[in-house]
Image 1 (cartoon, helix red, strand yellow):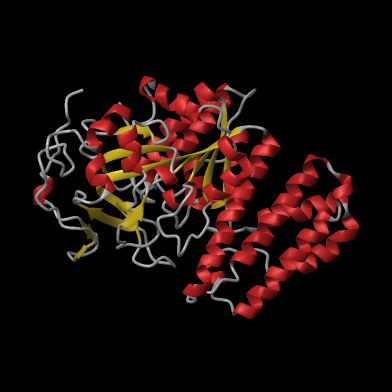
Image 2 (image 1 turned 90 degrees about the horizontal axis):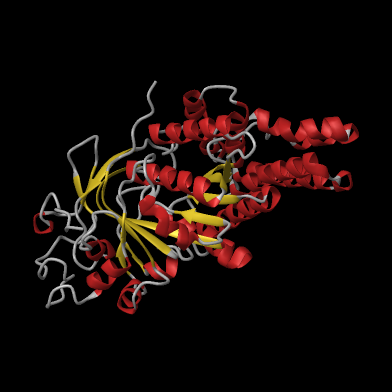
Length: 456
């Protein structure tokens, strides 16, 4: 394949974050300096360094858009192998190509590898709402997305497209339907209907316990907005978390009845208890945030494991790179990742795929707590960044297996270098990442753009 043409010379670009609402430029990366000959990653003598080895391992992508021929993903199928859970990351929370590529990969894994569930770092309760629609067809995909994804980066056209495809798939394959699950805790809400999934079970099967359960959920039911909930005094949030835990223990004490209905009621009660425990955090106390984030990643892994064992199906797990990888780029905030917990429990049955990109736009916020998602832009990565070298591979977009790449590529992939990963706040400095230590497979895209706003 001929080397793709870069639209703008790297030497002419300064990697920046552009605040869409104004004209302020905030430097976030090293300014591009004069590099060696094209494709050398600063190494004399042509492609004799890591770029040549990376090209030997790279598989070009035909497209990042779902639909059409997927012959270019056959090698990815081989990389996935017998994995039961595939974690597919994203270098930003709001780029079109990351979202559409996830749908493309999911479709391929459903059709070629028997995957059945798309999991997202959305609340457990929100995931069940989406799955109810997928199984019954009752409602409207767009209205559902607007409600369930409200205030999140997934309140976008790309996720409406995913949900619509999943529902259409189920219409034509009622004997092997696909599912949607939320593995996270609390965001954006736990509505009254979800609490009813727990109290309804107890009312029908153990009515004598219902008054006590209702009392325990008093003052807690519903959690309409987790950000507003965090405004409650800490002592009140701790009291409500203790009540939620007692409610879980009350439901679990009915285990003798067993059965599928009990399993779901207990898991739903567990989700409420997990969420309220997480929401006893103090966002202003940075010293305690790592502990709560570790708890959150552990819970997300537990929820995925519960779903996989309960359904027996294979899962594509969508989350930010720092959650799906074995190691986070910010270990001070994420000391143990969801991917690390899944590796502990599933071994080789878990496979993480990371994303990198060279330049483009995405959605993020000025403040992680509250605020609006808006567009930011960065230019091409400068020398010294992982993305700078990856983008010299002759394919515009490609993927590779970090485990089986040539020795020179593996050596390069095992060294930590600055890599941009954007979550709920920007600007964000690139952080050191050893790609092969975090991901079994890597997808690199030359350029991305912000995800599309949800249409009325």
